[in-house]
Image (cartoon, one colour):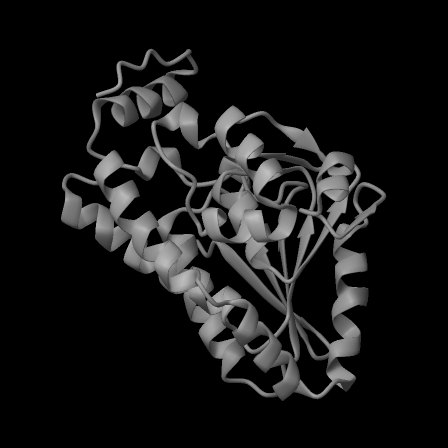
Length: 253
């Protein structure tokens, strides 16, 4: 079954993450489908903006923990070659991206939102960077995007403490650009995206290109660090504890 729903509203493409049984977790199939969709969109001059949202009241619960089973360093690097292709397509796209966040944007789900140029959140949205509890570092380009959005100090607290926070706090620190009533994020995101149809696309593309500087170095570090951490005992413990719904016991190995 497809894990991505594609629609059009005028000159805006709408991509809906759709794996409701797993709260729209970013399974590798979903990442491949997003890559294919965004590559088609990028080549289509009739699309002037992209809105990303999630189905069934959840934006994205993060990576699919059950699929984090890289057997060796090379396999971990390959996983991130695919993921980083998606990240680059979003951040380096010539078209503006708008995230419409309802419910949870956790881990890589928060990364998807932070890759977008504008983030709209429903009042009930929740954000968290739980990578520490899995024995991992933040990924999906968060080490690049989040400090640029909220500043180094708030980003450090989000990464190191791993505490969840609501839409109001996300607005105060700059992770979110607008907060609307619960359930209204998609319509507001579409309203923000619509005027791009009347703007000159090349200057927008050039601004996005300038603001993506530094991304490649961040992704190179992330790819090697995360591939190595996949092989640690602490990651195995974190993954097993998550799936068993128990508290992990880490040993630093």
